Length: 254
Ligand SMILES: Cc1cc2nc3c(=O)[nH]c(=O)nc-3n(C[C@H](O)[C@H](O)[C@H](O)COP(=O)(O)O)c2cc1C
Image 1 (tube, protein in one colour):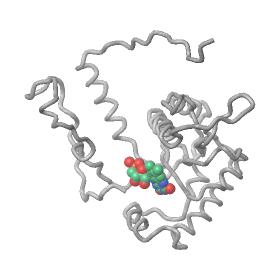
Image 2 (image 1 turned 135 degrees about the vertical axis):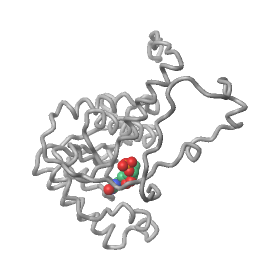
Image 3 (image 1 turned 180 degrees about the horizontal axis):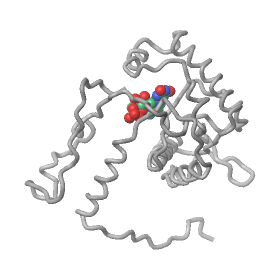
């Protein structure tokens, strides 16, 4: 018997390039609007929203399709409070006890973050993503491959799914995060990866006015684009990309 997966046809609709570009501009606008939020409303969020965000995360590609992630959703205020208290213990040592290097603290300084994690008590959900070093296969553990890469992609999809529903989150890493294994009673083959408070932004919430690096700092064509682009140079049909929003005093992203 073959140990391959059976195959099935895969034929997504072939979009005209212009239609593809129209859709990706809309996607870009949504992605670009997303911000990490540190001030949440206590307004309730149905568990179904969390389920849909994790369904989206669960579509991520993964090394050998081992899907080495586990999202643990906590709405219970008492458990959220335990997480907040434990996170603040670690973050006090990070911010005030010298565990972060001076260089790291300097990189964080423009964001104005500190050891106060009161938003973990306020946001109606905390969702912790655990990375599975091994995955359960029947009655044994199978080593997972490319765990960081796979879980990182899944978390990106999770974040964007929340944003699509008008929800906000923060990619929060109050390291070391072993307290999450203990509080959430997770097995030893799972490692806390990212903690996401989830909710609606607080009324009047603000975010640091950061600037995202320009495309040419994120993308290199090799050889240069002009030598490779099948579309001749010159004005392209369709609307231009959205202009950058005016920013008063740009601060480098951290
Ligand atoms: C892996 C990772 C860890 C992060 N950890 C924290 C954190 O512990 N606390 C925090 O306030 N922000 C944290 N952030 C959020 C970043 O500061 C934020 O993504 C960055 O400033 C860009 O802002 P934006 O998400 O609004 O685009 C983290 C982001 C990433 C990707």
